[in-house]
Image (tube, rainbow, N blue to C red; front, top):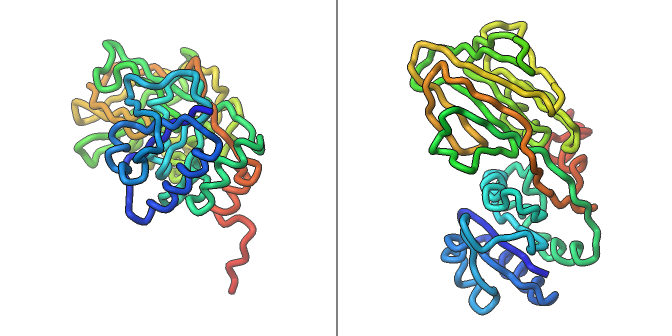
Length: 293
C-alpha cells in the first residue's frame, strides 16, 4: 500500500491525529510519502515513519493507492493540483470548519486506514472543469482545471460587469452582475450555494451557472449538461477582471474570450460508508434538526 499525505498548515492541536494516522499506516506496512513543504511542518511526527517526500512537479504517479489531504476544504482543492490526471483516490481529514470535501473527522483518523483496508468505501468519479484563454494565462500554466468552480468577477471597482454568455455557440444572456460562477456538482455546496445555487449530487452529469449578485433580478441559477461548451466575454468600466479556478486567480483583459468545458479526466474521491455525502449534507446544513427549542 502506497500513500501520499499533503497539508498546507499544521497546528499543535493536530499533532495527535497525525501521529495516530502514521501509526495506523505503519501497522499495515504502508509506504508513506509526505509533501515536501508539509513534511517540514510535521517533521516531529514523521521522523522514521515515512519513505520519502514529493512535490507538485515530481514524486507522484499512478502507483499510489491513496492521497490524504490533511486540512480543510481549501487544502483539498489545492491537493487536486498535485493529483492532476494520475487517478490517485483522495480523501480529506478535516481539521478545518465546514468540511464538505474533507469529511473525515480528525478524531476518527485511525478508521480512515482500517476502513480502507477493510474495503468499507466506494470511489466516486468527480467532474472537473477547465478554462482556456488565448493566449494561455501564465498564472494557470498546465493547471487550468478546477474541482469546484471557475468564476469570473469584477476587480478594483464597485461597478458591476457584464458577462456575455454562450452555450454551445448559442447566445444565452448577458449577466449584469458582480460575476458568474460555473460550478461542478462537487462545487455546488461551495461558492455557488452561498450565491443561491442548488445543491447537486456529486455524480450528476451537470454544471451550474450561478450569477453573483445580479442586477437583472430575473436572472436565476441554471443547471446545464456537463458536456456543454461555455463561452464568456466580460465588459465593464475597468480594463480587466478576475478569473479564478478554485483558489487560483488570474487578472485578464476585458473582451478576451474565455472558454470553459468539462475536463477530460476526473478526480477519484474516496467515500467511506460511515461518511457519505448525504450524511455530510444533513450534518453541515442541519437538515432535519428541530430549532424551535
